[in-house]
Amino acid sequence: MKSGVSFGPYAARGLLILIESVSRKTASAKVPLVNSPTDRHHSAPAKISRVVVFINRTKADSQRIAVALKEFLDRKKIRQEWIETLPPQKNLFGKMEDLRESEADMVIAVGGDGTLLQAAHRFRGSPVPILGVNIGYLGFITSIRSGEIRRELSRVLKGDFVVSRRAALEVHISGGKKIVRGWALNDALITRGSNPHMIGIKASIGKRRLTKYRCDGLIIATPTGSTAYSLAAGGPIISPECNVLTVTPICPQALTNRSVVIDSTEPIEMRLDATSGPAELQVDGMKLVKLNGSHTITVKMSGTSVPIAFLPEINYYDVLAEKLKWRGDGLSKPKYGHT
Image 1 (cartoon, rainbow, N blue to C red):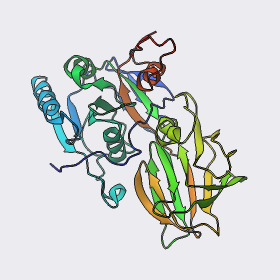
Image 2 (cartoon, rainbow, N blue to C red; image 1 turned 90 degrees about the horizontal axis):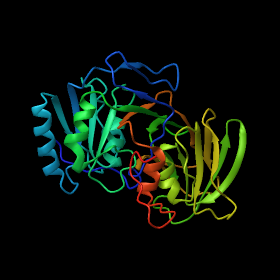
Image 3 (tube, helix red, strand yellow; image 1 turned 90 degrees about the vertical axis):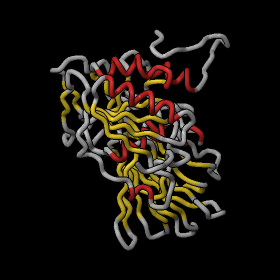
Image 4 (tube, rainbow, N blue to C red; image 1 turned 30 degrees about the horizontal axis):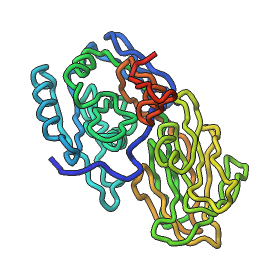
């Protein structure tokens, strides 16, 4: 197995974006992945019999968790394929092996949100649901805590889970020597990178001019990514039911430049201003390409969604309260599934 760690400083802390949840409690249930006509249907088996396990070996306690998980899956007679996450490296986006043809009923991502994001990239377009086991820090889009693996995974293997279909982004960069394409579950980011000066970015929504930014960068985020880098830059938290994208500037020169929430059906087109210095484009924290004034960057909603598995009692707003430590009365202690 390849050794590795989770990728990108902005990869962790993605929040669940849910267009609709579908129960998978019976063998006849269907899990439609339908954010567009190109999405496929995936029939829910009566139980899980084959899994791919993604694991981040650099996380504390990962070895103990791996041993316990393997023993548990072996006892349940679950066929397994184990894969370690890739470490941060040059051209990581292009080096991730496509695993869409792997034979599995479920992908189990053991680490944090970054581990789950890497699994989403490598299974991009697959109908196989991804279940997150959190041994990381925040774990917004993971469902099971490390101390609950045996109990909760027993339920999941019997089909007691729901699938959240999460929107993703497609990125298209033209005007250079070749066309570059990217994909992101959390966000696409134009950043000044090693350039010590602010950059100028002209942005349009569909055919309509938005504005010209003078800033350190610009984040285009899905609802999943609304609690990642976008939130740290002052962007809003987007409810899972909203079919929108957010455009959030990083340290804008104009104090009135704030996040804009737009209809996800409209593409966002951006160019560096003629007076701007160089920049780079990242997807989910991974560098995709260096940018100059000749490039046109188009970001739009992807035609396919990402199926992520959750325990049925998990409530989106409890996740917010738990992870962001909301304590309205200073005493309450929110729990998953609290009503």
